[in-house]
Length: 483
Image (cartoon, rainbow, N blue to C red; front, top):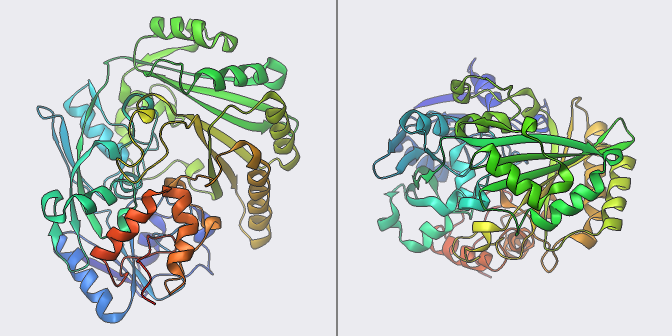
């Protein structure tokens, strides 16, 4: 175990290496008293025991992609338990399983799978520097979710260190806790050391395309047709992400980014029948291996070596000042609604919207199977993405306010009672757990929006396994009140 205090010359490097939202890397950002970089399960136990003895809050960090910095920032005395050294990956192709430690990145996992098999993969994010621990425990989604569902749907065992320092697996932790850590945010219940996952089959050749159209190029009609077919009418092998952004400060560009688990000829047949307005041509399609498609989706140039996935340094576009929000849509937005949204986007000029279609396997899994509840009836989830390159409170306030303004404008078109949000896109605007007698009621604010009725079961499990609420953060699962 290596411990870095503020007096250590490597402290700043270790702290900043896994901060991807520069809003939380300023001179005024609260800093941890120390950083513990665990090398063994015993180091996790020691961290838990010491934190309780000294009344310190413990932040658990795997990849650092959390949008609100909750794994490395607090306004009380705290330290970071950083998992990046615990990153072993043990793949068993014969059983189609893998044990993956929490500090591994998705890129490392994908690369190791590819080294063992060209016909296996795993449904998770296409951002290769995301840490396994946070991604899987929050549900984890990617561009194979219409075919296979979430990352958490494929977790079959886990190793977790609980509040008493015990190393538990699925059998010893029990099915309730095992349920909670597959989509309910494991950092509320313990420290995940590793997950055992079930791999999925992928073809040797997949097909991708990336096509953009502006308003002047009939983007509105294409988006309307995309809404009609992308969630529930397209082949489950096909996922088409839609991103809308302002270009040249005057028009909207809609970009359609596809992954098809098959060859280009079959893809063209599906597109000509189901989404003809996009006008996909053979020249738009690129055939490649599944692991190469991850690089394509992450905007690496075609031909980038596969071992690029092993880099733990994110692309510059992922290290910036940012604000993210999310919403779920349960019915297509009408033409006049889209026109109004685009007008508002052009007016504020700072926010892109990325739409991820649901349906397929996502609609077949019951919403209480794991804590992640957003299943049948969801057309798509979208993310508000605002990024800027210069620091300063005024710049940040302007960009955050504009994001909130667009979020408010979208109210008529999104889910209601509750207005649903993605836990993997944590948003502090939804509420903060103050860790006192108010915490349960305040936790209901964000908890119901992230988990719907599954929130109540998560609270019961939390109260049982961590009654004194040691594992906590600003949006953790609260314990039942003890008035």
